[in-house]
Amino acid sequence: MTRTLATGAQVRFTGPTDRAAVICANGGQSGEVEGTWSASLEWLVGALAPRFPGLGFAEVRYRVKSWRRLDWCVEDAVAAVRQAAAPRTLLLGFSMGGAVAIGAAAEPTVEGVLGLAPWIPDRLPLETLRGRRLDVLHGSLDRWLPGIPGVSPASSRAGFERARALGIPGDYTLIPGGLHGFAVRAHRGRPFPLPRARRWAELVAAEVSRFQQAGGAPAAARPAP
Image 1 (cartoon, rainbow, N blue to C red):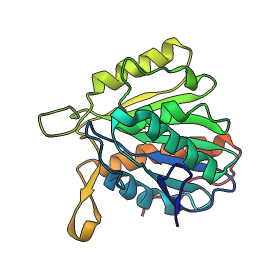
Image 2 (cartoon, helix red, strand yellow; image 1 turned 180 degrees about the horizontal axis):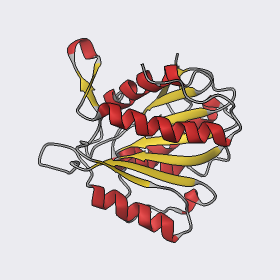
Image 3 (cartoon, rainbow, N blue to C red; image 1 turned 60 degrees about the horizontal axis):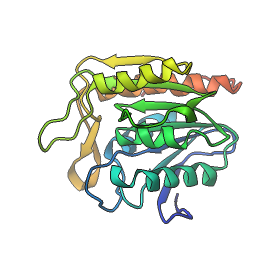
Image 4 (tube, rainbow, N blue to C red; image 1 turned 180 degrees about the vertical axis):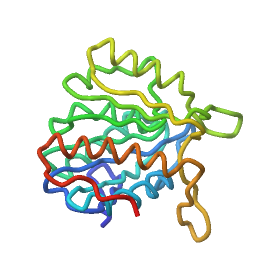
């Protein structure tokens, strides 16, 4: 189910949000272009939703997917949190979405941020994470190359350590052989998994399960198909 938010962005829901929700924030770029659905997040939600039938997933499509409009992207993510209206929320941010998720973390229902190859620039304030967790997963082979987007693990590690210095709890996990992202658009627009995608999904599922169990959910994640 896709809904248009008050900001003009869109959000796509999979599963119920009456108990808890995972809000997924996409990456971006320098140029100010119209938002798109993320192949990586679409593939990830497709892999995880059947394992967590009592949990809602929401993918955010920004108005403009650019770090030059980071404040707009944060507004879009906040609007998605409010639209989901879940009593408990986990923010999952991929690439630039890591900064977006951190920016939106002050929402009262947010309990933590899970960054997937997150962009956490030095200038980004981290005070919004107080009272919450920050967990990071990052591919060991991720890096920026001319014409190829990427975020170095050293960069996300520096942001993670800044958060730790503020007393923010969490874990940092490096994925050997992991790239920047875990799926691309393939034939007919369907997401096609990249190498190590299943490992990404396993680790994200473990973090989502921890979030779910922290709220007293009795059921563990179903095994992967």
